[in-house]
Image (cartoon, rainbow, N blue to C red):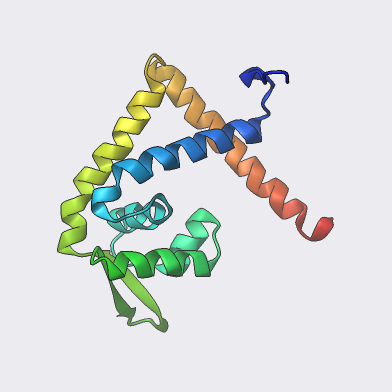
Length: 153
């Protein structure tokens, strides 16, 4: 069997490897919090925008509402966030961190920052800025490509 050279892996495969290896790292590092990598997107977003709705989170991350609802429910059950009815839309709920959520936030941020530092070790700040810019462009084009090709068009 021929060994696969990492240079032969396409962009999507590289992104998939990074995503999976980051999740393995986060699963191990976050065990003591009870928060999974699949809940982090909601937790961090709520910490940055108090009283955000589930629908807004779904829109930011291009996720279905059910996925966001499950993550939010688990965070609420763990005591990290609270939901209050949105006075402007009785079907929506505004989300915010609880005191427990604010306590664990610095721990989570340090875990995330450590992973970023570890995987970017030896890469200059300028190169990292370029990488983020390129990845944002790829993300935008990926979203547009997905929209352009909905329904097999």
